[in-house]
Length: 263
Ligand code: SAM
Image (cartoon, rainbow, N blue to C red; front, side):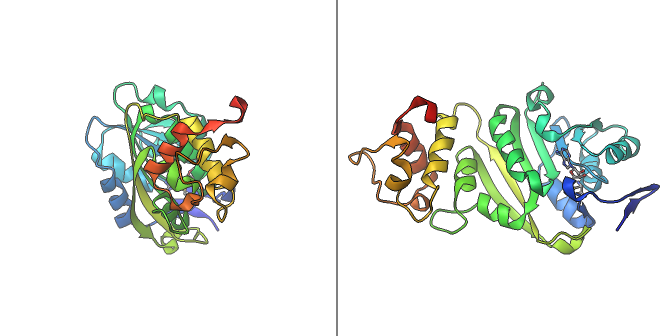
């Protein structure tokens, strides 16, 4: 199946997650959700055929877009001369360099295969990012915004919600894309906490991953190989899925690793 717009025709590349959005109303809703104002520093991930790019252009005179596909990058350059196009893998772009004056508002209908790496990049470079409005697989969107004691609550929810306000905004049917993906999508807004978070993010990450290693096991059973367990300070008989974000932060602040190298 080919997809065309004006004089440009492409064979969508599955490996680059190329499912193009066709519904103008949804595109407008995504752009509205980002609360864009002139002067904002905005970065769009994967503009593709420019569906969202067009909506952002109506709200801002200039912004940056990052597209890995050579043909689509050329299309965006020709169609949107005021957009500063970076032809590169988004995962290798320095967000700090783009956030010279203001923190970035990031938008994108993102390539689903690299959803997690994109989210962890935003966490790691959060000093450069104020918010992100992202369309992703519905199932992943639910996992990001999940509450404790639900089956969706896990590593992704805890990592994200510890550093950002996470809002599940709305579902998007798979029927509004070409080619049609296998599953529905959803749009999520992340508003990143600024300043010192008050905890060690690298250690927190290790604690959360280890705590969820075997979901049905207690915290003690998951953590004991890597951390000293002191029953006087925490109830380690609970399971990871029962802990709130604040409890995870408290847990990671006093857990002592058995070897410094393991964190
Ligand atoms: N924004 C367009 C839309 O909504 O119709 C296209 C969205 S499509 C789901 C994902 C886009 O991201 C494609 O244009 C694809 O070429 C691009 N892409 C894939 N991997 C990328 C990467 N690592 N860095 C930047 N862009 C990427």
